[in-house]
Image (cartoon, rainbow, N blue to C red; front, side, top):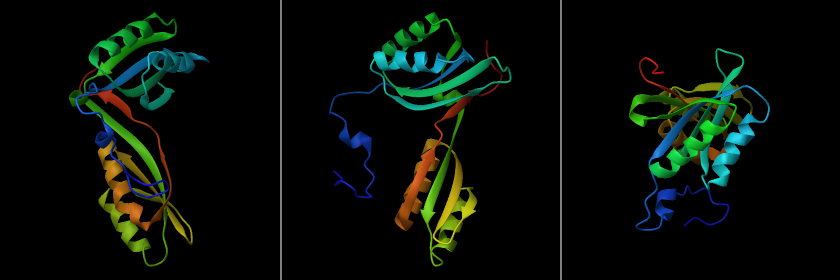
Length: 184
């Protein structure tokens, strides 16, 4: 187990209790009315049921009166069903879809501020190119890189650049859409 203030990355799977089985990862796409307080009610419902929301992204849709909430949670199938039934009861919820991971295109955006002196800057730029990232800011002592992709891709980039000195990292949370034509 890592010591406090180390740069060692811990894998949460190593901390699981033997025999305990977390449910599958759920990506929920929730269409809601674009009104104040709706997000708080949706998030509160998950909190009351004891779910930890892994990622949460909210934004408007092509209809300015409707927003899409995309959240990922880890849970057993039965409790997710109960939560989605309760979400349907909320007045401002229009539609809920539990997206199947195999039938979903999902992406996340991350910004990395990396310590970069003259010697390490070229290697950081190479890693950025390999991961199809984009350098968005350069200063004397740091480089800020934007990487878009799957959770695995972002974590792999983080592992590659961490030895240079990761100053700061910001992630948006996953957004997702089902593959192919939408089903109503």
